[in-house]
Length: 445
Image (tube, rainbow, N blue to C red; front, top):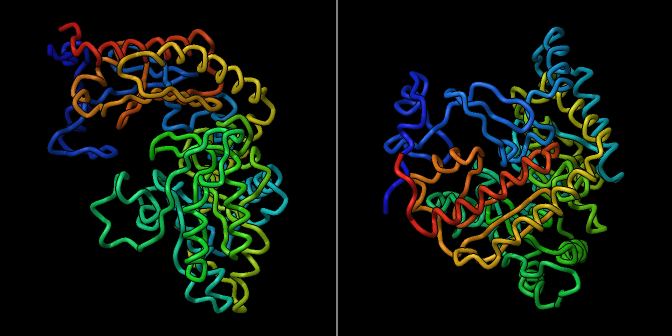
């Protein structure tokens, strides 16, 4: 194989050299620094690199920049709040941005979700959800209900509580298995469409919750789309069955909508496609339109009353930057911007084009399956991409796009504002990536 050589194409800088020598990036080794591209600015769906090239972002910065970059309304919201205060502790104090955001979240979610905990990140929102569930039962004297039931191929974050409900075999955290709490894992859902539903698809889940309900505080899962655990899609009926079983066996239900929330699957929240509602809801990523880290955990009156059953109701969590007013202000404006836009039609338009463009790769010898849901497009290969990652990132950028493959998948989750032409550039680049991998021959630069 002739390897793709990126060094001659990429402008080296002191920043890149220092970064390679000293900075850890997500899931990387400092002993073998990854290929990096230095971004100097971003606008709309484009990132500008330090060598002057512009690339179309197909990842929405890990699914968060739904409005694109450098949006004037979000910029102004941050500037306006910055002139007032960038931060103030949330212990013993409150402020208008936090109140406005909580009011907005309660308004746009189901009526049963009435309480909001503002967290720092998606992982922390999951930690808070787990604490809520365990405290709910503990305060009522149900001290044995300390475990969770979840699904294989799930991903919920990188902190220890969140790691404990990620897939212990196929997930990224297997080395921590001996120090993590031991929870229960049902098989990943197998049914993509309600019309194909068979009762056998829920049988093992039913057996687990029936046998262990006395020790289960909650079920936690990602509704309709299992994200970083494999970009797997599954049908609403599975979730209806889970809700019924949770009710039958007196177990709380947590939905992790950090990736699916704020329109990504075609409805504002994925649970809206199921006709059921969780007891606890985790939100993040697109909450601020990708401007800064913020997340939220919402819960029902039932959960709050359970936590308060011991007479105190003190939820044992309180991050330093909880309710950060700068992040809350941008989040309020991001939600307003989304609700005022034609986002439903934007997502449907993206979905139609992804289905049409990516279907061309169904018959490619490398491709196992093509999957599309809302503004999510996945090309799943029949082989892992590990052996390609020394040259593939540079090759991708040279196609004028930013796509970050992982495991066996080449996938995109573009900003909702993307044009048809720019989306075509992304889907065409996926075809070129497939060909480059398939032939194992790329031009030497």
